[in-house]
Image (cartoon, rainbow, N blue to C red; front, side):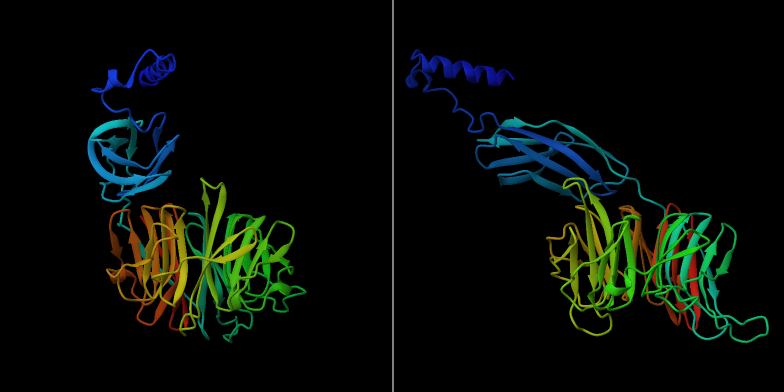
Length: 442
């Protein structure tokens, strides 16, 4: 504030003609930044990263900016001319830091921002205990998706074939298993309706909003399941040209489904609307996260025909439009996506691909086991799980990756999906002719 007052006084006296340029010939040159102000805002922190927003007001020309960490110069940026998101990646977990920004002019501190404190997250534990369950007696059984409502209420869906009371194959397969906190129980969820002639269809995907508001799908129709009774929703059926693979929604009045043949559809709480994807590739996964800057949900989906190289697709869904976005660096075999918007994006397939932004080139993490990665889900930036072929389960605790293959290896199978909530992780799939489910708990 004093600098501003002095500046105004000089302008006044100059206007009155009471000073001359010559009388100031030995003075220091005036700052070219005038009324420029800079501020720093802490957006987020992981265990080793911090996201800062650097903002300018009344910036008159590009500025050279020094970022200080704990009072010492830490990073320099030349010729900044707009607000900028800064990401620093070399920090220590569970540590307090302070940051500020300085515009430097002719070797001197011209403008100084506020100082902001930041504490990085602590790492989570790799110390999970694993227990594996198998289901099925005849035919070929498998589980295709899983939803964790809480530690005493977990649903996994698929198709499980057992013998009836006479020892013969039961013609009506179980299509779910339920965890009540103590045991897994086989369940038959009724799916018969005017758009589904099969009473107990295999279930392909599940997404739970609450214990009594659960979306399930046989691949060709949707059901709204309250934990006991399934209410068929045939509205989506005319919009589909291929089976539904996965669902995600911010609420039960904003549910997205993706599937084979490039299918995408959205439910607004009343009706279904088809979203043109511009591709015939199988869309294998969809995920969304709220963007606090744009005040909108960021929704992304990935697709490929996993075992045949027919290309790849990475799409952003906004306002019922699907738009291709940057896929540079990705392979053609993509199966899953998880992200925290403007922080970290992870795609699984024939590799594990990570990016800090959808505008950057995707980088493959070559340090991970070479098995196919089928699914990625997380509690947050310091608690990420990846599952895949041969029983692969990986955990990122915010600083390091850990493989549980010695405990979870499947010699003739794979985990196809994973769910994680708080201290429970569930991986599901198939092992030989049996459905397999592995539960991890701390």
